[in-house]
Image (cartoon, rainbow, N blue to C red):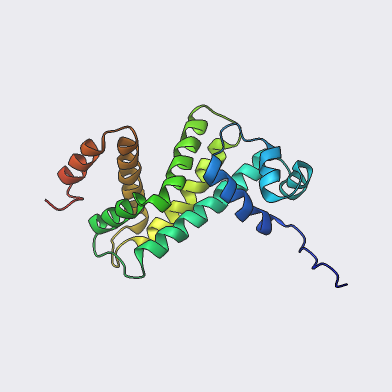
Length: 186
């Protein structure tokens, strides 16, 4: 009788994808260590062993999710750089509306609400995610952009505002604003 194959030891790197799948499917609201541990096939004590605290786990997990989201946007946008800032906005908004991106958007609004309510770990997690996405957005700026860092911050403000207005049923307001600001073709 052959020995059963040994499972590789659990590490932060092996736990994060499992935790990500659970959080994207179920959100963070009311998430305790037990459901997260169950989703990862481990115990809540092992999660604390690997991450230190629940707050650290949330920060690491959301930073990881931001990288997954950026990679998904990269794959959707392809390798060709946008020619203008308006093209960057249009491409991101078009891909952000895709069904595959909706779990990320629902989670993002949950994080924003948690940060606004000053829930433990949410503010730091939101800052970590935003820093990751701003770095990614700087890399999406058109070649020769005179201020990629400032431009990325401007576009993040526009994109986040558009996403928020759309989420609350004012997508037409967002579209009119983008049009008025020259970020959509007339």
